[in-house]
Length: 351
Image (cartoon, rainbow, N blue to C red; front, side, top):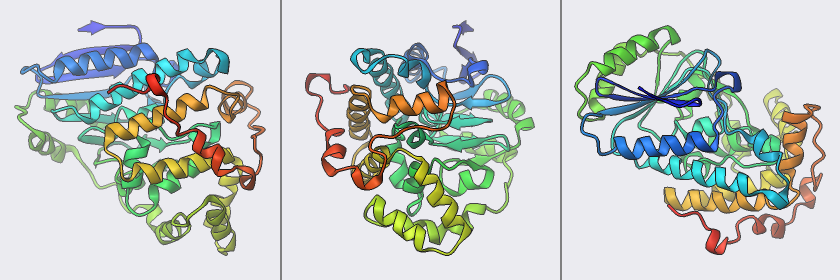
């Protein structure tokens, strides 16, 4: 076994196993971790001894709670190269996962947010457990649901992708399967036996993985999200953020009131950028979506944006009271949004 402090690589039988190894930091990703994972996946893609790859998180709390955003935000906009280096390295690795030619199985046994979604959702199999807590909460810190969110979110059923991206709502169990984010469910206490069985199997393709999963998978039950599906599709099918908010305000329903309250807490400019991001992403190939996201995040970290204020309020001072600029949805102009999509010239992401 080759070990690094933050990520472990192991070959067990026909499996290449990646273990995110920062349990005290909820297995959040660093630039170095992303680079090492990309290197391992590049090697394993052509290694005949590797039939499939598994990725898991160390500890009992998290699969991966995201990127190490707090560290990135500690740099000022004038010195944001560490942030853009992280995003570039992460996105190259995300693309490697999407294009990986062998079964790629993510074990989502715990908190799975942001960057943790990027290292799981683009693979062939996403196994969730009762401990999985999924969210893309970036609108609460002035960022966007990146790591391929532009690609997978508009391809979720109905308007679930925009709903998840704007509200950052947290999903569990059956809801994660219902949304098409997870592909199978099994209880946490069966994971080790599943990995052992898969390592001992003869894996030629995804159907061999499916056969082993079927021996351990269970039914998580009804999805609570289904109760609100019609309301979600109607409200988040509106053409603008203002229209979404007006639609929710007009609904006499507890769900609508709670959802509107969530939106009012988020960064107005982030939400408008997210809407444009997901609309554009619906028509893009995966690599083009990643390049678009890199443009957006590069612009976000290059000025005193809501990102720095959001991270301060949520992760540094933890007062949960960000002062957004602009403060009101109506004050975010189309020009402000468009600036985040401008071409980066010779600094464009290379995939």
